Image (cartoon, rainbow, N blue to C red; front, side, top):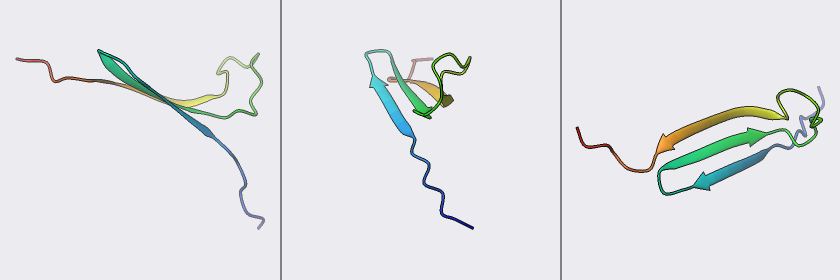
Length: 50
């Protein structure tokens, strides 16, 4: 079995309220509905007081 040479990109946006992360396949066509986004997440930067 040949080795998997797939290249992916990781993007991170650290803002004042949330931190966003995304995993992208750059070979995916922009016309594709997913635009190459394989996974994403969002987390608050600060714990909210209860």
